[in-house]
Image (tube, rainbow, N blue to C red; front, side, top):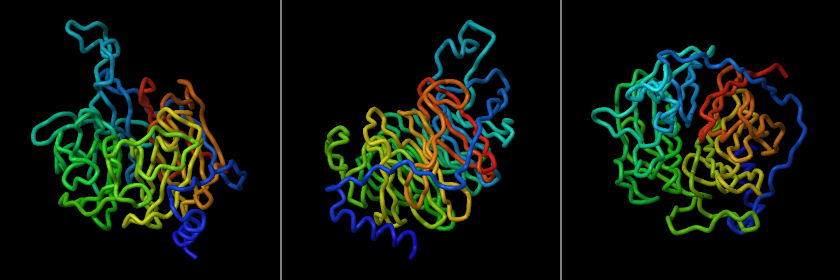
Length: 371
């Protein structure tokens, strides 16, 4: 039996109406060969040009193991960019361009981005994804109702949506403060976690920008009616909360979506059919417990690595069971700790990369150790 069929049977047997019963929170379980990691405190290497980064919102590892981040230059304080003041306050620093590319050793390879001619740069940078030689970007600022496509050198290619034009979660032309995106290259489709304003996954043609389909939690039609605040004692919400924060595709054609404030990820087929969900740390409030996730690179993608920006930890989850089998980190600002951990990526060697927003403002590398 395939994983999809098995999950469908389990979901159907457990609950005939998705919103009427809550799945149990996955328990911590001991399993064999759980990957181990050690933080690399010297990654990445110092930036040139007296550059400094602000809140690092997104990270992605491309097919060549290049590590891409997008940060928020406008989140830097005047003191942090003292060299930019008139007259300068200090010898350092100035804001780095928002898009930075590194090699596996932490050397800076490219840097570009920001407002320009022909496109609407987001008011608050958020998600980044690199596929087939193109860089996709999303922003979650007020009125950020667009996503952008560039070449790896920063040349503008395409914009989907227009700022301040969104008409809600069933708009087929614009986004609603989108958080994350991923490209299904063989199908030429762009999936967007949409977002901080809307409550949906939306799919566009990655070549033309044409709308294709969208769905909400459990595959429902999304709506924008007021929703109560998250309550761990209440039945699970039948709509995504705000934000719909991440989206990833597995090798076996499943779509993983982070419903951050509802402390869960949900799993779908590519047509939006609901497959399953998993809840983590269900008593968590504030910004929720499932900020981002990435699947391991081994055959079968046995593990899911997920980051939690409220409890500030990285969890290792066994994908078949949704059981937590390991944890890394704790709140703090020392190497290997987290302050509002936000995004995660994995390279072909199994190394992990995490980013932090708020006043965390960094990207960290966790080297994969032999089991």
